[in-house]
Image (cartoon, rainbow, N blue to C red; front, side, top):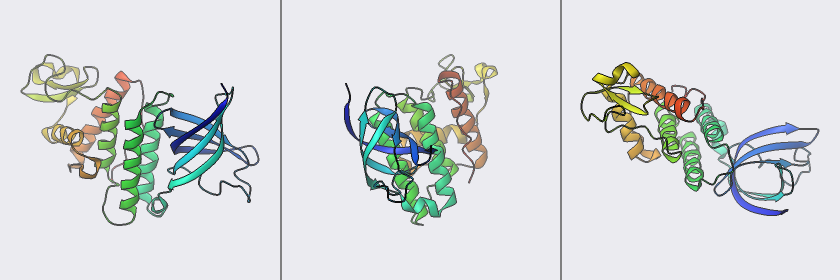
Length: 244
């Protein structure tokens, strides 16, 4: 039935459409990813102003008709994360976080935990851009992706060999098996060092604000583990999490 939908949303992507409109991809807590058109938003006197830009957290009213494309009828800023655009590393991390959510959670299935995680990440990056702390890091991006895997039910097995259940001698990682593997099963994966293993375990157990540190080699190994897990089990390939 046609009607209005009132929801919080984070703008994942905003694209020009026609002479004055924009198409938005937004992520919501109870309707997942939605697409909507904001008519006339690019006109000078638009009532929406500049608030329908990527990374804005909004309170929106969307008109839902017969089309899959909803219509934006109202948008109020809850958090515009204004400092992101003044800090290249934070802005890049925000873009990769929104892209990851959009690719991995691309349906209208509700995931309020994912919405909260994305809001938390953007707020942390905005704080980092202000110079209070440095969260715009390679480690932070990987911790965010690990938590997305957890939310999607794809968290890698890290406590024991994903192939045989062996709890010791965990020296590799297999995306196909879905986690770490022992020396006897290592042929099915790639070498994963102890530092990378410790980082992944710690990142899943910690808040984003307390993401553990690790060396660049360990982070590259962790990123490969995350990427292979996504490709094997979700058939999704994310943009590389660029080192900082």
